[in-house]
Length: 197
Image 1 (spheres, rainbow, N blue to C red):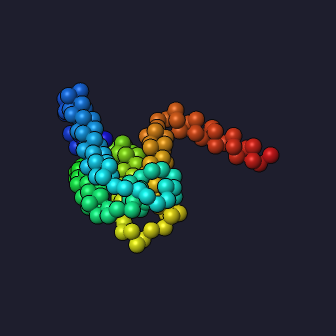
Image 2 (spheres, rainbow, N blue to C red; image 1 turned 30 degrees about the vertical axis):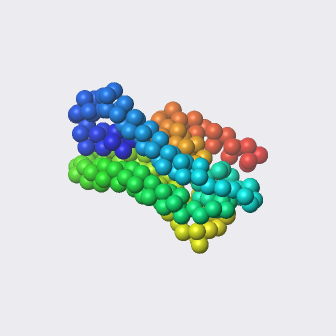
Image 3 (tube, rainbow, N blue to C red; image 1 turned 90 degrees about the horizontal axis):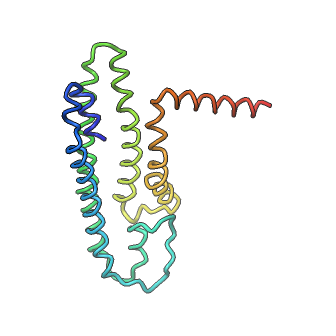
């Protein structure tokens, strides 16, 4: 999405040629490969762990940091693998997105008309909201030290990046659609009228 927005804003006349099916397949394939490598790097070391104590994870989902706390063997290798893979895969994605948005924002600021700036920023604002929601919560969850553990905060962050962000994603992107805005306004108007009665 970051590359798509970068191409749409910074090189609009070349968009159709640049964002062809081959490039789209490469971007999707690259993200799938990164996801597979991230999973393998963190799953294979878990297979060597022994679990002999309590078997209840105090969390909404079975995430690796919560699982490592239940192991009765040394988890230093797992923690190093988790931290290094989060840094490599998480920060590389974040850095790629950040660099593209620096180019996008500098291009938007050079647009002379305020209507053009508003239109260009509305194209990428929804993606920027989703990116910030995802990266801030996920990276803060995976990069924090074990001494800063709060069960409620862990569960809240986990809900945010694993459930709420993907769930809000279609809603945030469709808010640019005029039909969606009209339907949302109409629905909120009906809710307000029913509460007033």
